[in-house]
Amino acid sequence: MPPSARSGLVRGLAPLLLVAAGGCGAFSQAPRIEVESLSLVKVGETDAEADLVVRISGGGPQATILTDFRYSVFLEGRRAFDGRWAALAAAPPEESIVRTLPVVIPGSMLPEGARPDQGVAIPWSISGSVGWEDPDRLARILLDLGFATPRSGFSGRGDAMSAPPAADEDGAAEAPGGFESIESSTAP
Picture 1 (tube, one colour):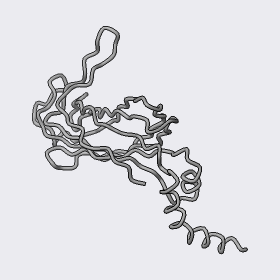
Picture 2: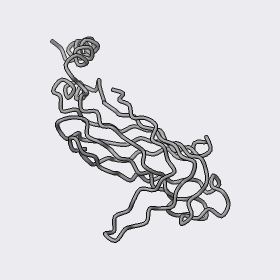
Picture 3: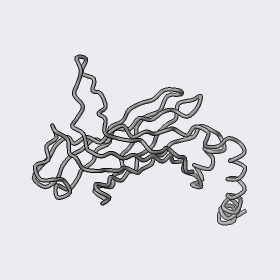
C-alpha cells in the first residue's frame, strides 16, 4: 500500500480510535490545576512583572508528565498578557506540585503609583491550560499520530494582585490570599 493511502486510512480511522479511546480509559491521568495567586513582583517604567502561582495535582496512579502551560491574564476585563511556558515537570500521583509562571503587564494597565510591596487593588482573572502526556497506550498512539493532545484547563480570579509572599524562617513563602480558583477541566 502506498504511503499516501496508509495516511488516508489512518486519518479515516481516527474518529473510530477516538471513540474507542473514550471507552478504554484514555486521558485517565488528567491533572487538576488550581490558581493560587497573582503577585506583583516588580514595577518598571514601561511594564510590570508578576508571578502566577498554580498548584497541579496528579490525576492517577502514575506520575503525569506535564508539557506546557498556555495562559491569559486579564486586568479589569481587558487582556493584559498571553503566555506560553514549558512545564518541565511531572505531577506525582495523589500529590501536588506548585509552579510559578511569569507574567509581564503593560505599565499603562496598572494604577499610578503601583508598588509590589503593597499589591494592587485591581480585579484580575486568569484562564489557561496545561498540556500533559497520558501513559495509556491507546492515548499515546493517538498523541503520536497527532490526533489527540490532552490539555487540562484552569481559571481563577481575584479582587487584587497581592504583594509577593513573605518568606518564613525556612525561606519558604506562603501563598497570599485575595484569589478564587474557579475551575479545572479536561479537554482532549
